[in-house]
Length: 204
Image 1: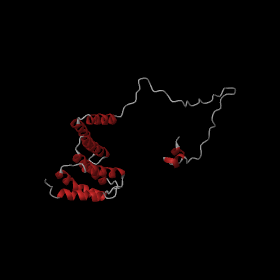
Image 2 (image 1 turned 90 degrees about the horizontal axis):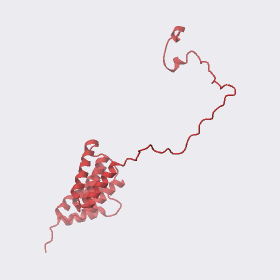
Image 3 (image 1 turned 30 degrees about the horizontal axis):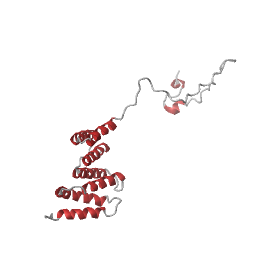
Image 4 (image 1 turned 60 degrees about the horizontal axis):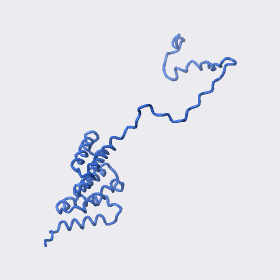
């Protein structure tokens, strides 16, 4: 007969399980006299060999990067840019526009633009990287933020087209004001060149 049949109230939980007092403790059984007591098997500390046919799986992203930069360094810039753009679109679709994955592919595209000899596009993309990281709440002194603005500034210095350089100047000035970097005078240098770009071009 259960607990309720002994005049108590049936219940659950810790209190009900222990309401009837402590239960009788049964000592562990001993082996018969003379029976050998086997010692526990010692743990084998040696590393186990992998099963037959096992092989490490290569990181698919590493091979993707290798293929992209191999194409870029071989001069197939359109092919490299198309591959990186496709991966960026996948990151945007699955993780969102300011996700780490999407920002990573922005950085890849910026570096591909540098390799392709398009400093204006590289500058534009590095500015987008910095803006995204700041928008995610990363501090201005974060190395990734500083690095993005520094790279944008560096590429901007190589933009020979006055119109494109002038168009990029306001955003670069705005970001340099927020992220001055470690080199003193960087913001003033951008402002000086921006003023020169606004001045009429000299003709010979």
